[in-house]
Amino acid sequence: MDKADTPETRFKVPGFWDWLVKRDADGDRGLSNVVNRWLVFHVAIGAAAAYFSQVDATGVAKTVALPGSAILIGLAFGWAGRSASLLQDKSFSKFLLESGPSPEGYVYAFQLAVLAVLLFIGVALILIMGGTGVSTGSHVTDGAINRAILFFFGSVAVRESWGIIYFVNKLTIQYYRVREVELAAESAEHRIK
Image (cartoon, rainbow, N blue to C red; front, side):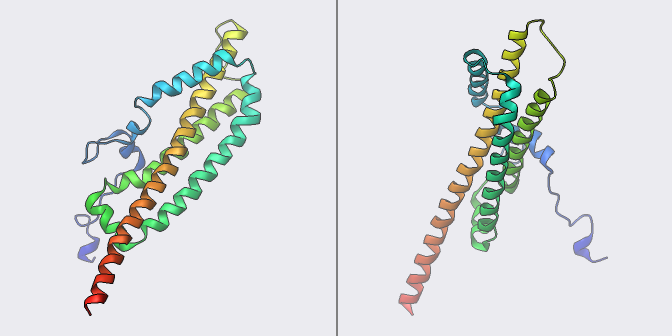
């Protein structure tokens, strides 16, 4: 066995679930991407939708939630591909490792967005299949609760998907700033020669 293959020299990479619940070296954890002050906003969206909308949550789940989820998943994978191409650049990777947060935050943020969308899909499917079977005894109240839950999870899924678009755009701008410095240095070097 080569020394590089010994268990002592292998890199320990935290998994998604560890990243989600445990604090990293910077004191951050993935769950803080969702459990933060914005959670109040998502609850308010769910409550407002439950109060002001009288549409059947099952119908919304079939006609809006599932097709919308497919769009969000497509966006997540499209933007993840864009970020992967940026992270392949050696000098940019070096910049991120030296001055950015832990790499898990970059990679697992995409997975968290997909998880949020999958939870939204799960809630929609539960509603389409007839709900959980739990009832308050009032059809009107049950409908409002179902709408609130569906719109709450939808709001979280949209925010997480928007978050990765924002993240990749910011990453792209950082990439061009690093390239700008590199190109200026190369230009100065050529002028000296």
